[in-house]
Image (cartoon, rainbow, N blue to C red; front, side):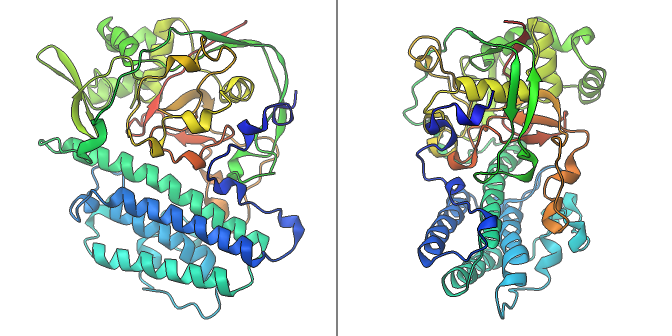
Length: 461
């Protein structure tokens, strides 16, 4: 069954302002027209402006914080995303380009070892210099140079697609900027808000009962077919035989996870993978990240400060071990990434990208999933996108036929295909036009500071 050819086109190319549509076949071997370059510049400016908007509520002190080695300061995210455009677009392809500051090449290199030794990641928070103002000036400088390059120079389809990669890269860092500042603010005893108005006028939605989608066995075509933008790890498209399975129409809620916790889930080693039990034993964790019990009530830290837990919202900030233990306790399992993708192609609500709780929704936290998307109002559809990234049981490995490119950009995804697990679906802080059904995110199994949660699956129909 070829999933990409038998579905409503609205699923594969949603009618949103999406730079995924700005993708050119490199086999065309042509330069972009002026109109195409102007369209690409417009999208570039919107993505860059989104980053600026996300940093607006933060002080210079906030943007300097690095609360753990896995996180980075907001100021570093702002500079590194600019470094990407400078390093891969401007320096090699813009005539007469003169770098803003040659020392930035070392300071803001993340992990591209073929370009030199990056600055030690756990010490990014020690970079008080350059100042925030200098980083902001750096961003403005890069923006002016990109505009000049796009409007004055010939731009091939290959280079245009490299710029689109840079836009998607910046959107990844928009997510990370929010997840990292949430962790940093959570450590402050004052429990400050990222933004005070996040909860203003917010109505809670009733959650639907859990329903199951039955997926028949078949040969399915999975992965990106290369007809629109995708990261290299999403392809090549390939066939896979999939036995019949069931998958839940909605995510696991805080109420359900609290039942697991109160039933002694963190005290029962038989529910846990060996590494997971060692992890919670070593860390002493007895509840999800950001959960706090106070006077018999469970609260959690959000980007809007400390709040009572919405029991009907999807459970969040769970690591892979917690997700797997909950699935074992519930009598089900986590889906493989292939099962998730097949179910999403076959049953994803046709307006999923528009209706999903993602960055543009402004909640910046998981919210109760609307009942009309499940079982009742849309019996053949479910909301697979948004709210939380969903852990799968699949190790992050290359698809058959995958080959990383031989240049520095080839370090983007391929070299991380070891010891990490795949997540699907995007979250409440994922930009809406950044997500795709084929998107493969990946994190180490112990990590929980990203907006991660659970969808259950089972064997048979």
